[in-house]
Amino acid sequence: MTSEAGILGIGRDCINYLRSSPTQRLCAISHTPLFDDGCEVLFRWLTAGDDVSSQQVLTALQNDIEGTADIAEALISSLQIPSLPIAQTSALSALVLSNNPLSPAFKSTLFALLPNLPSLRLLHLSMTNITPVDALALAAYISDERCQLAELHANANTMGYAGARAVVCAVSRCWTMERVDLYSNATEDPAVDAADDGQDQDYSRLALHEVVSLHNAIGAYAPGSGCSWTGLQTKLKYHLAQHTCLKHAAASEARQLLKYARIMLRNARPAPAPTREVCADCECTAAAASPSPLTSAEGSQAHTPVASSFSALPTELQLHILSALAPTLSSAQHLRVIAYASDTRTLPALRLCLPLAPLSRGGGCVADPGALGYAATATRGLSDRAGKKVGSLRRRGTHACASGSCMGRGSVVCQRETARDEWLTRVGCDRYDPSLRRT
Image (tube, rainbow, N blue to C red; front, side, top):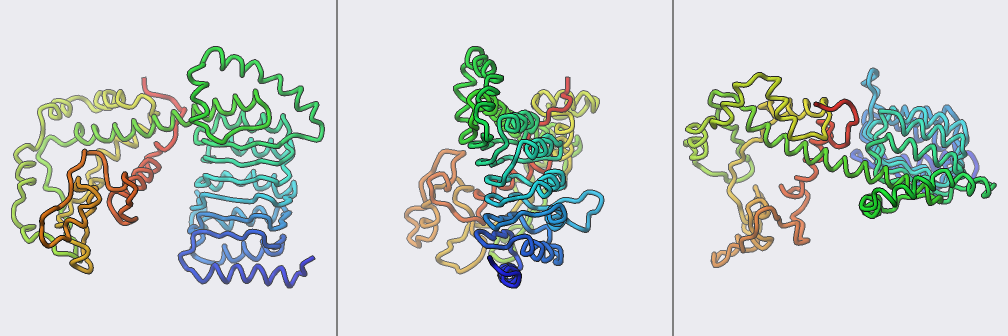
């Protein structure tokens, strides 16, 4: 058994290592005998600094943690932003507590306080002694409207059929959930679990008989998800496939609504010239101060006849017409997208930068070949002083990353998906909203 001094020494060593990187976003302490005393040291450090919200991943795997109710409260409070007492939040997206003999008091308190971490997307609770009573508390957290979990891993526990069924029923109301692992969760009496499995056999046969096409696609929409009971697993995968389909539909319709709302909600008067942002670290076009052909064309065609006729309609009628482009979105989601589209401050700035050869000049603004519509070899072609080949043209809609040669994290194309996901989260369209729909 590790002594108390040794425990605290290990905790201090781990904390000192984390402190060495001020931009640390991942805290992973695995296979280390921290016990409860080491956890208290870790949580005190998390609450002592100003960058509490910067922790995005917290992994405590196989640390011999049993925990108490006070330790669970300290864990949640250490991951919240103390400057927002009214609506506390955090940046934590993943919490791993697998392979720890967690006590019932710790688990009940943890599940009750997890809704205070709305940014949590991944939760690992495998081999943590989750009983049927603990499963009910976990199901209550999943059913909470503040829960935004996307993945739940709770394998090798003893929640039994009753506990697993409660979790599956809660998953049906958590529209962000995409993967759930509940394997090896039988109780000490397998006969009871086998008898209870008959409750969902009718559901499994009904799904196979009436929605054969959807049932065949369940495996593609819910890969890796399942449990130890066939009927309950079919029910679980059905709900996850439904969540995934509706999530993709909401995201696609939100992007489509934004595109057309930008056009149709423009003011009838000529819009000012777009903001032109010139890079300070590269040789941009010297004619930036002169009238641009793009600006002149926009000034001559300030507003299309269709947009002018649409803007003459009452506001309520405009919103009702635009809502037909996104029937899956709720009223709140629809209004958030419309508000974003009609705000001129959300328009991207126009950058006037010439593509430079990275090999011929040390620094500066390097244009992404994928954004310019050329192949990945365009960069090498631009650096060819002979100028014989600049790159082969490609079909629109593809980019350099499609061929497997990524242009780097700083390129336009590689950041596009990240920016799109951030926008969907900002307007609340990264998930399906089951609230009242527009009629």
